[in-house]
Image 1 (tube, helix red, strand yellow):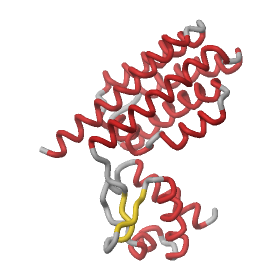
Image 2 (image 1 turned 135 degrees about the vertical axis):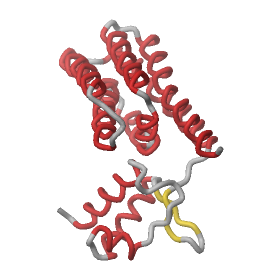
Image 3 (image 1 turned 120 degrees about the horizontal axis):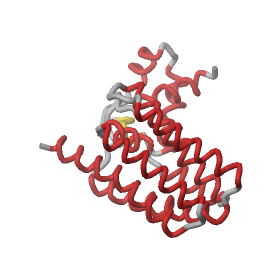
Image 4 (image 1 turned 180 degrees about the vertical axis):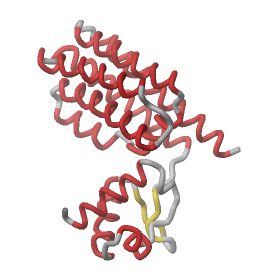
Length: 218
């Protein structure tokens, strides 16, 4: 594997999963030693992560994991809520039969993963991956390339992962139920209902993160 890509994947995973926390310094020499790579691919990976918005550079501190404020969480979820709600509305109008079949399979798979989930990182990875698959399917079914591009830029992977980590099993099950309801609204061509359900579903994640932020600040 290309060393820069390897460095990018491993550092990104550490940020998404919280092993590198917001405001942590990203020291090239230390990362190179930890990942058994030279500093050149580390530097390239950090530049890519900065372009992606996961890393920022500060004067006199160098690269750090981007911190997130309550205001940023609110703004992010408001934007994502509107974009994904619109994608769900379009999917209700445009989804193809084969896509609908796959979407229903995605909902079943998410529930299966949830029912076998616990609080370990590997388990949350599986929940997160199943969730990403279903949401991506809806965006694909919307057949709106520009909207897909905007959502690709808008979805904040560390926040989504943190929300799932915060969820108890009942909250994960509630997410599974929302997936089924959204899927059936799309299947029935009920665009407005699908959009409203998606908006409420996404706000679950926002609430979990805000609760986590409040606990952390105490």
